[in-house]
Structures are given as C-alpha cells and as structure tokens.
Image (cartoon, rainbow, N blue to C red; front, side, top):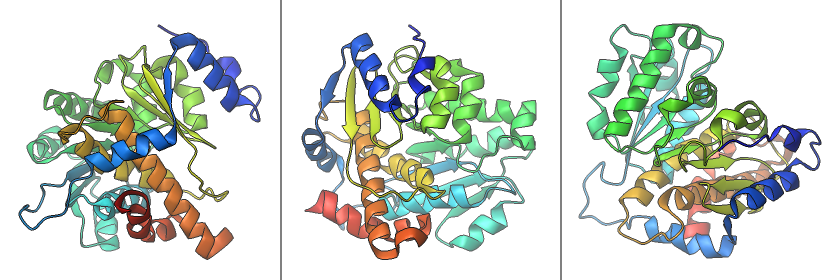
Length: 319
C-alpha cells in the first residue's frame, strides 16, 4: 500500500496535524496516550544486579563515521553506554577511527568500513552484538555512498544482521541509503527508522511503514510520531526549542539499547517491542534536551544533553 503524502508538507505550520489525520484515516491506528506507554518502558529495563556479566545488558554496534563526520557516531555510541548498554562498537573508516577513539577510551573502534573485506570484518562481530545502528556519520556525498561496493557492504551487513534477528535502527544517512533500495529492510519487523521531517519528505513513498511490512517508524518533530502501521504513539514529552546538531544521534544510540531490552524482555509490552523501545528513547532524548536547556539555555549542545542522560533516566524510569 502506498499513499501520496506530498500534500502533507506543503504548509509547514500545519503538516503535523494533517499527517496525523491522514495516517489515522488510512490505517485506523490505535493511538496510545503517553501515560499508558511509560509503564511498559519501565518493564523492559533490565535490573542492575551483581549476578550479571559484562555485555549482558547490551552490546551495541554503530555503522558510520568518515573523515568529515566523526561526532555523530561518537554521540550515538556514548549515548548507548550512558543509557545502560555495556559495550559500544563503532565500525568506521580508517581516517575516522583515531579521531573517534580520541573522544573516549570507552568505545571499541573498528577502522574497517572502507576496507576491501569490510563485510567479513564486521560480520565476525555480529554474533556478539545485540543491536545495530546504521547511519550516524556515514556521509552521503562522500565515497562511501558514491562507491557501489561501499553501498553493497552496508546492504550486506543489514542482510546478515537480519538473518541473526538483530534489531536494526536506521538513522541519518542510513535512511538516505536504504531509500535507494527499500527492499533491504522491507518486512523486517525488528527494524526501526528514525527520520526527521526533512528526511521523511524524501522518504515517504519508499518508507511508508505498512508498505514495508509494519516495521517501526519514528517521525521526529515538535511531537514524535511513533508507528508500526498497526499502532501509533505520540511522544509529546516536554523538551525545549533548542535544536542543535547531534540530538538525533543521541536518540539513535539510546534506541539501540532500548531495542535490545525490548526484544529480549520476558515482559508483555502490549504495543510491541519496537514502539515501546522507540517511545523510551524519544522520551529520554526530550528530557535530556529539557534539562540541558534549563542549565545552559541557548548555548546548550548535544554534549550537554549527554551529560544529562543519567539524571534524566533516573527521573523517567527509576522513580
């Protein structure tokens, strides 16, 4: 099924309400209130106990990072750690690796993304990963996306991750890549796409959730619309008016951890693990934004938001 969403974005001030109206009429989605979903998020968060071993609460892989874009994969990887994942791996190009590693010794950085045997180098780590985030800092105009082999590498890693049932979050330039070949993710219900409005306008024809087999979609904006084509959750948790670069990377990285918890949780999530995980990550990102803005105002940055993850998580989920 494919709808013409072109008119949705003609009037920027009204596009959210039109979008909601079209989606609800077209699919008769069940829409859940925020207060009904937050308890479900709390259920999937693994308790902290000394009986666990390192890695049990999440080993997250980030596919992205090139010479021009080193901040995005770092933001995603460090956010996953601070949310509660145990290990973060970044698979990037050789020239990006020293820079990303210099940001934090806590990240495991693999300079393999532009190597001739990239697929084999990354695939050997897949059995150890619980979720994969594709796109932060991948680059769009660089050789990674111009080069056919680089595209094939990314597609092949997605395919092999699907075979292992690994949750896959597609963000940033990963969305642009997948839009060129939607079949690579079609029907994989452990995939979560996280476009903002501009990305959605480029992707809507290829990326519509129902047409792609009910995989989850997080449409980021004034309110975050989270849907799998069956159910829809609106995240309107208060954030701030500050929209600095990198916030989407925080969302994607933390979503990597939430997705692992949701899909491996014995709890009944009712609305589906993808929606619960996405709602948790979206709410946390907004709370971090709110707290950082309260302290730093107009000068707040994604680095300030990341510093708020601990207290924001405690406020939302540990209370």
